[in-house]
Length: 117
Image: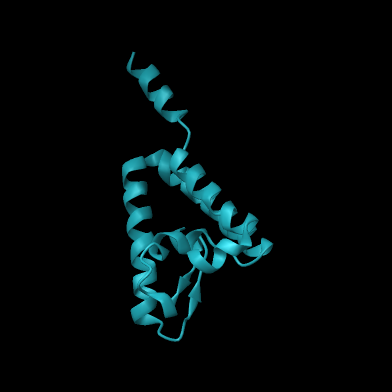
């Protein structure tokens, strides 16, 4: 009976990875959203950008490589431990833009999932 529980657990889909990856398609398909979702040093009071900047990709090549890597690595990590993956994803999503603000003052714009890989 325990073997069945393990096999059911192993076939669960990595919904967090799929959802986060799908979210990155929205700003690419609707480019007008990029300017209000990306990290932009000049509008630091817009706190949603801490999360949404990771969904923005500047061109098809950037989207392809960033999303492809994120989906592969996210799939593996989420399958191993979904709770730890979610914690790392949320923590990284918040800390990366904060670190950019303090450690890379010359960087005005940032976007992409690759920081979360």
